[in-house]
Every structure is written in C-alpha cells, then in structure tokens.
Length: 637
Image 1 (tube, helix red, strand yellow):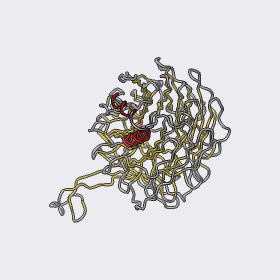
Image 2 (cartoon, rainbow, N blue to C red; image 1 turned 135 degrees about the vertical axis):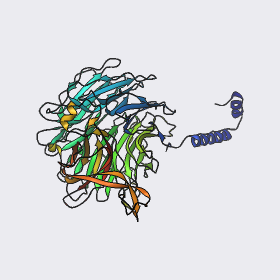
Image 3 (cartoon, rainbow, N blue to C red; image 1 turned 135 degrees about the horizontal axis):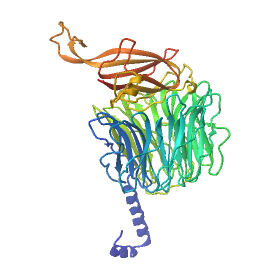
C-alpha cells in the first residue's frame, strides 16, 4: 500500500507520467507473481517400513490430507498426515487400531474443511469397512465400523458435501455368497447410519465408486454381472433421502468395467467406464444434467484405434468435464485426455504422455474454475517415474509433461487433488533404497485471478513432442499390499492378439505370511496370515508365468556369482538370485487373482525367507508383456 505522502506526490504528476508509472507498477506486480510450477517433492511417511496405496484430498482453501497404509512390522495400519495451506506436512498419525491388518484407505474433504477417511480392517475373521472423521482444525476421532460382521468388505470409497454430510460405499461378500455393493451415510454432525445394499441380488457386483454434490445428493456406480457380461449400473440418492433402484448405463453384449463417477456444484453427474467392442476396450461416458435423467445410450470418448483402459473423470463447479485413460497401441501405452464443455459433446482426445516408454494408471482432478491436473506412472527406460500435465482454465494441456518424482528409485501409484484456486498436490510411492515411502509435491498455480471464466471452451492443447529414446523394459517397482476379490470369468473380455499383452495393478493381500492351507488360516490363532492373494490385471487372454526367486550368498567365479563350492572357495563373496519355482496359469482379460499358500507343486513348497515373484505374460501371437514383480516374506508358523 502507498503511504499518504507518496500518494500526494502522485497527484502532482502530469497525467501521462502518472499513467506510465501505473503501467510500470503493473508490470512489476505481474513479474512478482509466481509462475505456475511444481515444487520439489517431500517425503511424508516415516522411514523404516513399507508404505502403500497413498491417497490425497484438498479442501477449497488448500489444506491437504494424505492417507496411506504402512507396515508396522506385523500388520499394515492406516496412517494420515495433514498439511495446512501454504505450510509444511505434519508428522503422520495412525488412524486404524494396531493388531490387525487395515487396507485400502480413501479420504475426502467437505467444504468446511472436515476430513473423512475410510478403509477396511480385519476383525479376526473378515475385513470390515471402517471410517474416521477429522473436524476442521481438530484431530482424527476414533474409527467406527460401517459394515456388518460375518462377511468381507472391500474397496471402500468416500465422498463428502458442502455441509458435512458423507457417504461411503464398498463391496461386501462372504464365502459362498454373491458380492453386493453397499452404502452408509453420515448426516452432518451425526453418527453413521446402518448400511444398505445398492446392487440387486442374484449376480455379483464390484468396483463401487461414489460422488456427492455440495448439497448432499449422491451418485454411486459399480459393475454387475447380467448373467453373461459385466454392465455398469448407477444409483442416486437425493440429499437426506433414500437410494433409488439401480439403472444400467452400459449396453449388454460385451463387458463394461471400472466405472468412475463425478458430480458438479449443481448436480450434473458424469460416469465413464471401459467396454470391450469386440476388438479393443474403449472408454464410454454417460452424463446426467442437473435435474435430468441418464441418457438411453452412452457415447464413445476414446478412438477405436487401440485399446483404451482405466478411465478417470472429473467435473468442475460449472459442469465442464475432463476424462483421462491409458491407451495401448503398437508403440506401447500412452495417457490420453478428452474434455467436454458444459452442455456440449466430448472433444477429440489428445495425448498427455510422450511415446517411447509405457505410461499407465492416470489420475485426474479439476478445480472449481476448470484448472485440471493429470498424473500417471511412466517408465523412463530404467525405472518408473511419476509425471504430470496441467491444463489451466480455458487453456490447453501442457505440451511437455513434468517429472515429479526424483530419479534414482522407482516411483508409482500417483494420485492428485486440486483446490479452489487451481493449486494441486500429488502423492506417490517411491523407494528410499530399502522401503517404499509416500512422497508429495505441490503445484503452485501462480494465478493472480482466483475467479477465471467458469465456463471455458476447453480447446485441445498441442500434442507432446515425440521421445526419441529407446524403449528398454523398465525395472519393476514393488507394489505394496492391497486386498483382492476373486475374479469372475464372466467379466473378462478377450483382446485381439495384435496388441501386445500388458500386466497392470499387481498387488498382494499380505506382504508377510505363514505357510499353510486355506483351512488352517481359518482355525489359526496366529496374528500372521496364512498365504497371500496376488491380484493383477491383463488386457487380454494370455499364458501367465509366475517365477519365484530369492537372494542367496555365493562366491565370485569368473564373471558370475556361483553357489559356494570347493572350486570357488577363495572367490569374493557375492549375492546371487536363485529361481526356486515357477507356476504357469491361463490368464484372462480383466482382473485375475492367484491364491498362493507357498505350494509350488504337490511336493514342493517355499521355506521361510524373503522372495520375489515376477509375472510374465505371453499371448497366442507370441507377444510378451513387460514383467512385473513384487516381494513378500514367508515366516515360520
């Protein structure tokens, strides 16, 4: 602000000089404003043990909350860290109680700055959906159970509105029973209500997602078998009301899976999913205008020149939409995006990642005024890195993606959130040389105009420049535990063998477990699980090979590390990788699971120790997927 004396001096200046000074001051003010940029990443989780599945949420003012799972030496627990707007990340705190495994956390903010988290935790027999609340300016309250006992709950999701109402959804199933999508609501300031089933009985339903508008109206989506194929269904709930019967959004005749949903400030809702068209998977969408009904037919968003999978969608406050997905083609997988201005149609997709190395698992978030940020995992020729692209309100996507994670160790599992000013926070997992840890980076939008045009035209940006680098296979990064629901063959869609196979979303239910049988795990009183369930996704029907290896001491013999013997007794000590066994199984397009209890054959089983399992895939045309690996530890029972 100018002082009074300086203001009087300005009044005495000639008009032309005064205008020139004001223009000059304006130039200085603009140059002083920060240019949009990603800040350096910081490590959020503590050292000493693996962290996994980070999630991030921002409120309108830029306060951030991250949640993740972390191994405590015996079990995985859910942890959280808070970062006030413009401040530093605070020390992480535990949300779930110790003593049992807690998995798959999710987090959301309401408009007042209250945070809500959900996850699943074992009660000794089943996984139960739980939730905790962090009032604005306060601390996390004790968790409460949402789902009932006696059946497993998996993959919970959470949404919150502008006044403190929250809705959680999850998949619930028990041994020998079908999977159902359930939901529980929490009115502002009140307790969680009893869960209700959203999907109809008679067929399995999976992959529930939920979104809630600022006034409390909620929309949930999932995919459900119709007896032959998987179809995408939706159910809506008015603010404070009851859930309406589900409707089918995708057409029957081919599998439609992985639905995602978003809502805007007026109640417009957008749903995207991937559907097999007989040759490839394509991304489809359905948009319900505020106060309107769902369209009778979905529209194709991706082009029919490759297989498009794993779509995500976001809406700004005015109803402008953006969707991202990964597309598989002859040159590998790239991340693409398409925009839909409010009241218009979906525009042609544009690439966000460069060709030359595979990019996958994209996520997208959009601010109230249309500022969008997408993040994904991409191989850099040696390891996996996290990249991002930004689209300012009314503009196009950045032509060159930004590398967010540091070099030297693999990073994976990128997530992103955007606040009301167009600033963002991304999180991911990155190795520290020993363990996986949660990292985060902030994006300073650098805008001096907090209220850009709420109804941009969203033109496509220029395509990224080609990457001339060669495409060696990336070093696979270990993926930390996540639960798995057995695959339903009816949801699997074969893909033409002209597209090379791809393995994605490799995870395991337990990173530390005991040898045994499935029956033994039910009767056991030990806190350690018996066996693990490994889950992964395939883009087509293939032959899957799982190779189990362990590290053993050896002696240098010439240029190789060999088993110790009399001949190499004087060789330098070294560490060698030993293959202990291989499993070969048929794989199908979609989600696959392998329940593994340590048996490699009828007579051979793993011994206690640490192992790495590497998955490969080969299709009928002889094309091979890039291998993916994870590690686990077998302990004595």
